[in-house]
Image (cartoon, rainbow, N blue to C red):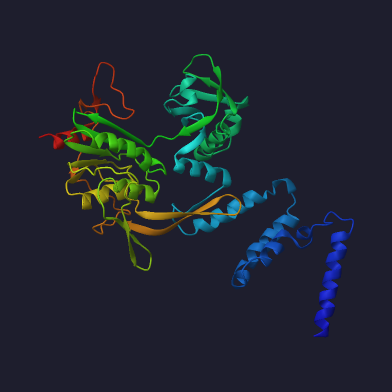
Length: 422
């Protein structure tokens, strides 16, 4: 074994000489042996052979690629993770970079810091899609469809150049958001009018996800646009107000609700009944029963009939809630059209760089074991959203009547009200 000591001494001496020498690599062992080599030393023993080609390729790029300015380690990491997850052929399994992951966390919490607007892009223009009531943007006079031209004197066109639509929205949102109390300056244009400039102070924004009102004199209408972390808490105030009224029924509007947090869905169901919320099924076939979560306060559970509105964009957690109410609430009916059909569960795993990996880990079944994924929920009463339907329903949520009308065109809501009338 004497020869092993000689080899070890030689390697140690060589590394010391390289690290202390007057070379570009002086003092940085990762540049002497290569960052890929250092990282490979941290790879679990059982995977080192499998990972060897990856680290060899990384090392070659890092040490030998001729255009040094194009070597971007964060982009290389993102590309590697994206490629790995893409091999699973599951569009719901993906990687989010740190900045996007933070925006997602804010959205799911239901609270963020900013000026209170939703964005959309049409024909390369960044527009205000929907301002949030009482937020700084509304107070400054910003309106829906105002075009954002510049942020803190940086042209929006330059920010979003060469980005796809999703990345462009994220890039603009990240510049508009910021710490509470800080300032952001926007240049906007409304239609063909001259551009105008507003200076806004960022504030804490409660992202609205639950609305309620009494319609048709004695029907409790609840609109849940997404199942955020604070949705059940907001609903608490609504249920206290609605259950105190002599109502003949409830309408729960889950149309175009893309889903959200599973525990939020369980907590919302807890306002209506106690029992099974859904079943979770892993790949091995084992099923786990998940229960409703009761509210923290003492709220009377409704006993009146319930109509749940769904459409082709009702997905994920909204399908869980609709399916559970259909299966477990004694007098609930679904009205609308076939739902989206996303019945699989994603867990979000934080990574060391601040990003996240979102992985599909199981699928959901309704309390009566109905499969949701790729099937959706079939309404008890199918009602299409016909464009030629008369304006004969109350204008709920953010809907507004057409000029000269007092009511809105909403055949699904109209049918729900008919079902609840004596």
